[in-house]
Length: 480
Image (cartoon, rainbow, N blue to C red; front, top):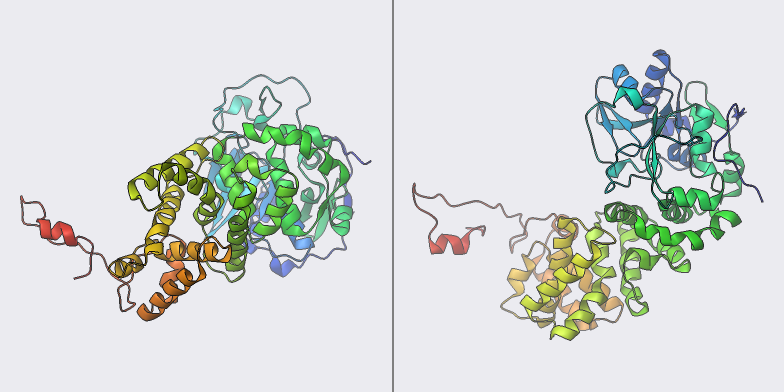
């Protein structure tokens, strides 16, 4: 058993000069940030997920820099900087259209710290290497007196605030997995390895740094990160990292719902959704996020597979489509108790209730909630196949998403095949452009006109002092 300490001082790293990093895959902006921080007298390295991905032949989407400079000092070096995050403040440095995330070296808590006020609704994020997207943004500078001494834990041991700054070796042993604790110097093309991360990359192993239960207790979202990296990288968890998941998984229920939604997107909208789902199911983690009884799994799996395929083809995807699939049978079961699914008003109430209940576990943003409700509400209308409604349904902003959802139902034997064929033929007759269809699937479309052209919404002119006539109200937003 190999347990790495969570903090170590005066550690000498392995300095690696022979590696497989292709420098052509490195962002020029990230290198510029490192160079300018070095010129200002600070240490600076590429770190985390970008280094890991470069070593296994992937092209990183984002580049992170770790430095000895504090966020305020970073702001003194660069012109366009925004400080973000409550739990761990970082600097977003903008160069052109690219944003480079710059974090200060951290250290672990080694003495009893003073308590600091903290917004308990903001549970922060686990690690900085690829999780910056959901940080709450703040523009005010850090309070100088305690700029280097801010950490707070909940009663369960979960980190609520983590602004204890330290040295690079402190920072290395403070990270989550060994493969994320590699520091790359793009100036001299050298790697610094404090935690045997290179050995784990070669063995394709995911290993937590330090005692696994302690690290999961500090931040339970590391459990979901372990699953996500396992699915994305094709790595396996080492025995200790795996064994600690079961006893620690209940702590995920205490994570802020908004943060769990953020993790839902990272798990299932990264191109490896089905693999992540299967690994979560093996560990009984799915129910922590969303209710998913066995009879509801086929349509959820079909939606995940479809999402992976669309991402592979560089097509748009949305969390709303996956949520509609995950919660579909919960919605259906409740509709069965309130009457037939065709009752529009009752359906809307049921949909609102199902979505509202999820806010206590995984907070669904309003735009996604509206998307889910529209997709569900369109299903009985598609089932009716009313000739009088065909045109209006085809022009509905959510038609394409509802149609794609219907086809998932057909594929999982939840709807008859001839129903899907019927609506497929109707679309062929109309000839909707592919671009419009993709926008509609993503929930961002403007309705198409019957001849396939994009329809421009315009308002009728009103006479001064008068509201719209009944005829104008009836035709508001339609093509002339």
